[in-house]
Image 1 (cartoon, rainbow, N blue to C red):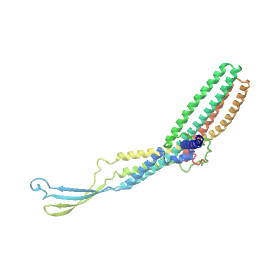
Image 2 (image 1 turned 60 degrees about the horizontal axis):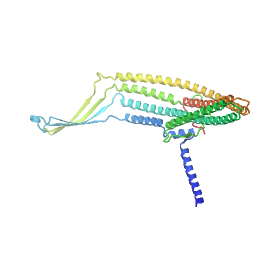
Image 3 (image 1 turned 120 degrees about the vertical axis):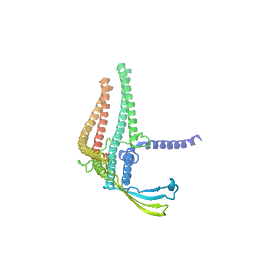
Image 4 (image 1 turned 90 degrees about the horizontal axis):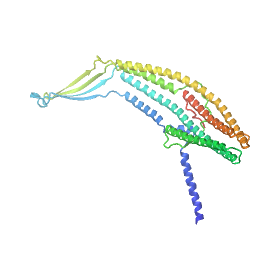
Length: 414
């Protein structure tokens, strides 16, 4: 009976293990291009841009609406004294009044609202590119943190191996007791660095999860971004979201000047009604026209403010154009320098690994002191850490270059 239960228990264990593995996999962030696509529907920052665009669309639709007419009812010469004690001598007037916008107000208002809508859409497009750049950096930071944790684990393994050899040599009388203490201290330091690396991984993954709008915190990233090949892009981009947004803001500011100038013209209000004379049992038409007198308010302050805002928008456009050119040149230079530094760092890692291997052989044979071995191990770990830092700097340079060129970084990477 007991032997028959083992296959069942094994099957249940396999099922539970598979379910647990699926749960862990579900919390692993996919490759960056897939994560970028997923974030389009979940990232709070992108939702903000969409909401602002919809608000601008609503305001643009509202701007085209005409003023509503006003329905009025007036009862005169009633509920008084003497002959006006009751409603027999009342005069009742039913009228409708329609404001007439003059000076091109409606056209100017509609034009300004459409310009604001174009600016909102341009800001949303710029937000897409900025978000993709920030997501790439967050992803690369998480991947770099994972690699640093792996390096820290390797450092602990190497330190444990060095400590065992040191103890063996001390036990055999070939090394002083202080060498074992030094090895133990190095092992403790490596373990402390591993704890810090683990905290760095958790922090980076938490930030990535929040930025991407993931409902569950990621436990790992699939990786591949640090070693991604750069995308060849034209040196002069045909479209820049940052400049497009600044230009749209400038155009919207100019349209608001025209709107404020149009508002200086007073509007007419025409009315048409019917008056009922109760005591005479007669009716008559009532016509009216009213217009405000622009004696005190000529809307000069609003026109001046709109003009100043347009000048500020023009300045921001010039700043955006200058910054884009500078950012593009700087990012291209940083990307080229990072590629060169990456090659050098790889050579450094290979040389440090060979130096540690030789130092370990020499120490095992008793030809090198422990200090040489510890120094070689520190150099190896440091070289591997510098290689990760170099790859991270390269990703940042490529992401900044893509942003300056109005592209999604690493969007086409396999």
